[in-house]
Image (cartoon, rainbow, N blue to C red; front, side):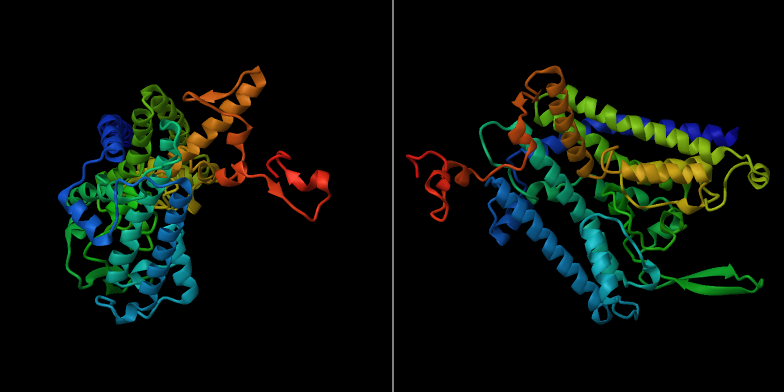
Length: 441
C-alpha cells in the first residue's frame, strides 16, 4: 500500500507541475516567437554572423535553411567522432567507426534517439559534451522552429513569409539551463564535475570483489536529453544508471522535462492564432492517450499471474528497484509517447502486454504528446485532415481557424511563378500545345 501511495503522489505531483507550468511557459514561448526585441548578446551574435533577425523567410528559403543547417550539423558531428583520438579529454579512445559515426550523427541531428553503442566505452568527454549534448539542444530547437512555421501559416494572412529559423527562439530555450541546475542537487554522482574516472566497486559472478573505472563527463547531458526529448545517455544503462538517475525524484524530474514543452506548445499555438480554446483542445487530445497508456502500463506490470511474479509482488525483472514498478511505467509511457528514447527500466523485460503497449505507444510517439515540436505539427496536420474529411461528409466547405481548406491545401502546391505562366511545348499538336489560355501562348 505504501508503494501505491507513493506512486499516486508521484503522478499527482507530475500532473500538477505540468498544469502549473503550462500557461506561463506557453505564453513565454509565444512572446519569444512573436517578439521583435533582441537582447544585447543576441544583437552581437547577429552582427558577427551577418544575420538580419527581422527578415522573414519564404517557405522555400525556410526549407533550405532547415536542410542546410541539419546537413552541417551531421557533417560536424561525424567529423568530431572520427577525430576524437586527437581531441582533449578523449580518454584514450579510438575514433568511432565510420558506420557507427554516421549512424550516431544522423540519429542525434534528426532527434531519432537511436543509440547502438555503449557511451562510456566509445566516446570521450569532449565528443559527449560538445557534440551529442549540443545536438540534444539544437535538434529540439529545429523541431520547434518547424512547428512554429506551421503555426505562423495559420496565424498570418495574405503572406508567404514564415519568419526566422532559429535565431532568438533557439537562444532562449528556458528549460535546459534550469534543468541542469536542479539536477545537480540530485546526488553526488550528478554534481561531480571532475574529468577523471570514478572508482566503482562491485562483486563478480564468482564472488570476488574488484574495482573498475566508470567514466562520465563533467557536464551531464540529462537536462538537454529530457527537455529536448532525446534518448542518448552517457551510460549504456541510460537513466537507470545511478549516475544519471541517483534518486526517484530525479527520475520523476526527467519525466517532467520530457512532457513540459510538448504539453506547453499547444498554449503557444493558441496564443499565436488568437484562439486559446484551440490550444486547450489540442492539449486535451494529447493528454488522453498519455493518461491511458500510463494507467494500462502500470496495471499490466503490477499484475502477477505467474508464480515468480506472485512471489515478487510484481513484474520487477528489468526494473530499477530504487524506482519501483509505478515510476518505471510512468517513465516508459512518457518516453515512448514523446519519442524520447531514454529509459529507467528495460522495456524488453516488461510483460507481454506491457511490452506490447510500449510498442503501440511508439506508433503514437509523434502526436501524443509527441516530441518537442513534432507533437504539435503532427497534431495540426491531423486536425487539417480531419476537418477536410468532416467537411466533405457534411457537404460544407471545410474551414479551420478561419481558413478555407480545399483540394489545393490538401495537395502539394504548385510554384506561384509557374501557376501564372502557361506551359507551351512546340513538339505537341497545336490544340494540345498550350496548357493555359490560347491568348497567353
